[in-house]
Image (cartoon, rainbow, N blue to C red; front, side, top):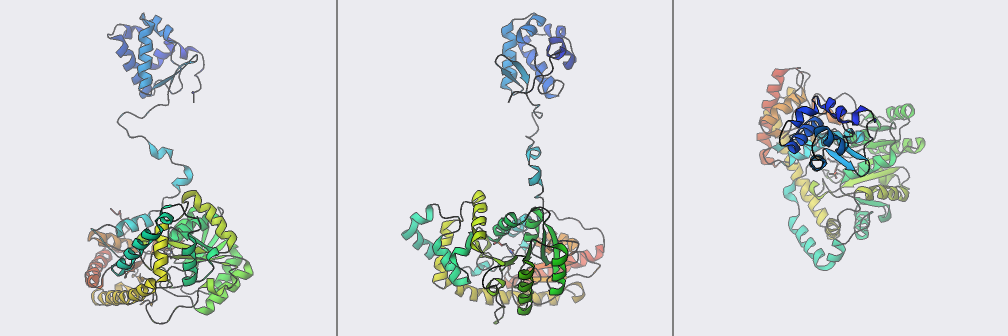
Length: 510
Ligand SMILES: Cc1ncc(COP(=O)(O)O)c(C=O)c1O
């Protein structure tokens, strides 16, 4: 777009231009070769901002007359400036200085181009976690990763070969945004619900994002586990929600009712089974009371059921809120294969009433027309063949072995006064308490210097909290590494104890 012309006063004249340049026409006219001198002088004046963006250069004929040179020389000089992006000529209007470019050596200033709303996405914990988990130089017990060594690679490969031999066309074509019908049927058969009530996702985190965009207006209150899943906190906060914590360990429904009355929330988010990070499972009575309150106050519940199939003992957890809410009036459920199989699959799903599934699909197709077909087709086969259930049984015993090894190693190598934790009966985490004199950030800082990545408690809180808590994912590393991890942690705890209550150093992860 053509810049507005500067006012037609002296500015546009030859004298006006030279005043801005801080020199006189006669100094220029003595120099040779004149064409290069004009380009250099004007180019310099424009890049240092002396001749501002939008300034109209004198007509070529005027400058030529003032300098006693040919008009063709001035035309060439203006063309050269235009080729450098410094000015722009408009037929019949004149030549104008373009927006001031950065100095030639400075990189293009993209930072200044980012939308104000995007700049709010400045929480880095999840990015740092997944980066550390994929860094071969680090031993990470920070990100939530199941025992990947148990992944049914052979069965997966066979299923993929079969799918590509028989249904390659369906794999490579576009698929429906809601997900492939055979996969939705397989999910409904294995995990409950109706195929039409399922929206397939590129991971549970995508479901949280879609729900936030579907249900939350800026300023809406959201009740969320305290401590609660950090990815949900980040997503709901970014949507402009006012987050209110509900103590998930106490899970007192009287307290919840008070919060419902006081904050009139738009939704309740909870992860009631083998909860991340505490490992607690909500008892059946509390589940029923929670459902009753949600129905009475007409507040939807988003149930994150990601860890349901990761019990470590024989006894299955109580039914999901989604299953207890038989008519599916208030509960929306999120599931994922990240913890059952592998986070790298990026495959999950939402179960909700049809109108919500339709609205979520409309939002999803704006950023992700549909989830990858091939993985849906392969996992549908693995479910149908019973491979998934067999794998979950294998995972259960391997996770138990890893939990026991980690618990034993920590008990042997770390003084009990420096690290207190309960032994979970499911999920993937030890939720650890540090004494008042040891800050979690200082421990993280010391551990990462020894290439061990642990996660501090603070991102799990919607308010202050977590400064003296650590989350350790015991499933992500083989049992044989437990002693080494415990020793490093013991050293880090001692080093952090020496620092006492000193202000924490923010770890920069590479
Ligand atoms: C409770 C909970 N919900 C959702 C997720 C995200 O899962 P996904 O990898 O499927 O996006 C996690 C991952 O740690 C989680 O702990």
